[in-house]
Image 1 (spheres, rainbow, N blue to C red):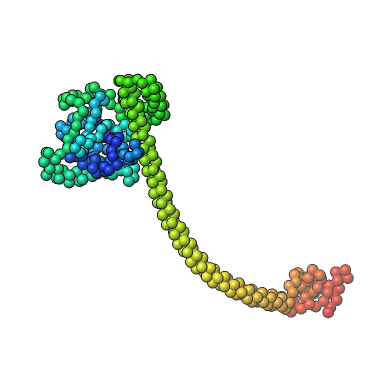
Image 2: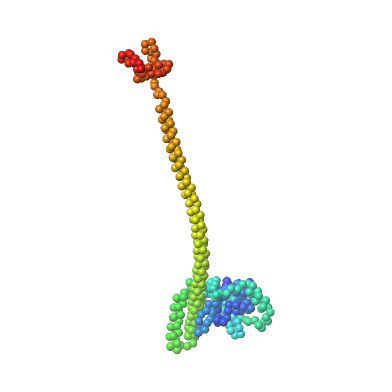
Length: 352
């Protein structure tokens, strides 16, 4: 495969509205120029008719002399590459300077798979050479010319999308100012009845800038429409997701309602069990208090019946021994019964 200087996108600025993307792809393939990957047709009005700007993305250049010559013609700024598609009808083809070639503008863009051209190749092989269309080269062209060392090829510049006749680049506002100036020059020259090469140069440059700006704004409008379509699709997608989310919320609410009902029933059962437990505790507390009071009463009665404990000392009074308390009460040492009261002052016993 020969060197193509990275040409991956070309454009045709004046395709009549009756020609489709498939028709253009077939012309490129049947003339052994290239397999295209996609073609975008951006419509615009010109002299009351509908035309398209065709942006053609190249998938693969053919390894043929026709393709080689066509690429050289594209690279030569002083020549014009014409593609004859039917009898004497032809298109001027040039390198795409409006965008980077990666376009997908909804219904305006048609893509082509390699299988498409395999089918077309089988059909083309059945045709005779007389049936095939050919490339028309405007001027005599040397096939062995090496464009790689002589051309000032410029890639697409998004900030300067408008291409001048001398391959200079302009911003849209700069191109508008240039077009306005050219119109004023042409009006002045026409009013002064200037003729010849000077007027022709002004007309050529004026027509060129007018076409470039028309193509730029048509592409921009098409991209806006495509973006709007993408936004509508995104909104539709989000609406669908929102509907699913709302359905999930309804489902979750139903599940929560069932859980709440289940918990409410369980809470009611637990509350009944708690109430019964409290009643049982109250009954047990009454029994406990009653038993406690009875136990305390029994203990008191036992304490009342039990003899009082008295601390005594053994003492000898006269010829007899007694137990004597600290209050001088005397007890019999054998029977431990109270026998009398000792008077320590008189040293006498008062018997009971």
